[in-house]
Image (cartoon, rainbow, N blue to C red):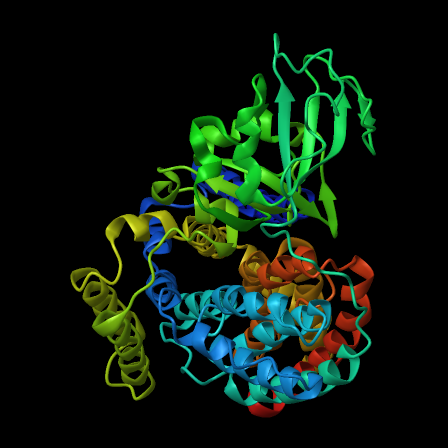
Length: 575
């Protein structure tokens, strides 16, 4: 092997290690890889431009931007209201059917976010028995079509780069439908075994409010009872934090001191009565934020907040919002909210400022669950235009009358000129991380070829694995891709495994398509971990699940999923 080949192979291995070590920063890992590839001269200018403007990647970005408009329509929300009924079985079947159908054509993160609200507020069934099946159904539905999940589109972008042609729109449908039926059956049998956690939502009657006794406050030196803090309307003093000490429950005779943090629980609408107490400063009410609406969000894995405290990172300046409450693993985190270390999957309630809607970093750090949304909902003709235009664009692509990239480009232009979406909204929600990951991964594949690593790998396969049945290496490809998915997320796993899978196929001198399809399906098969797929992360905190819940329900679903894929892919896509 040449020096360039050794260096490229080393960078590939270091990328895998980096993704495992820094699971919440895949974009940073691929960004570092980009600098190394360019810095060491392993790729040229033409390859960089070709990777950044890959037609499959452009199609993926256009489709994700167009799907933002569909999130602003009310059709899915109207259907969601009809899902939950008194019968658990009927509710489960309706939920599974609606979720899989919508996820086959829409962004599954938006589908889950929309359906979570009626599940959490339903009067018939415990939300924890429906939320995890909701996430799994969204994953399964995404495997049915080319546009059902970003993973399929990412694999398609690599396939276009390799062969010069796109995968057909319904190329995933045969195996995908079998996955929906098979895994859906197993999911239905095991869903009843899910525990019933008490999932009272953090709503307007259960917020935790952080206040501080200011220096020179007349409250200092007097008891809680004497200050009138025991008789507030719909607000209750639950904790007093003094230095490193936390006092709970709070006795009426507790003497307050300057610097004490007072933690109240109760109706957020009644919080303004705390303004009547001179010298009591509210943590989340600077600039009057608490007088505005509230929004509930989940912290993304790639958020800059992960591992940081609210105070240390300057949360208010960064997002023009204040954290009212935090929930993690089914527990309400009280105390000094500004000193809480944020983790991926934390559930935050935000009081937002005027500029919150205009910030470009909101969607990159949070998954919106309910409350204030950055965009306004569509109505009337624009709503019908949004839905009808998307259906027409997809039909044109399916029938072959127009390329998917061209139809999505025209549709996006129609959305912009009709006012269905603004350029600012598109800039805020532009999937920069996905664009970076996929383009750099394509660039890495160029380096693997030009440096000779791809040829070397193919020769090794021919030399040492030529006597093996292709099926066994196909099985190995599935297992490795699936393990990477659970560890480094689905998109990164697909990007890393595609060149290896193609190299295996070429080394065995068989068609690459079965290996390509196995990578696509395996990269979407995240059922055991809440951190491998965004929808799992969304329901993890809201449903108050434990890791063991994902394991108990996810293992039988994952095994069924894997068996169907490795058995049926060779039948529909022969070697």
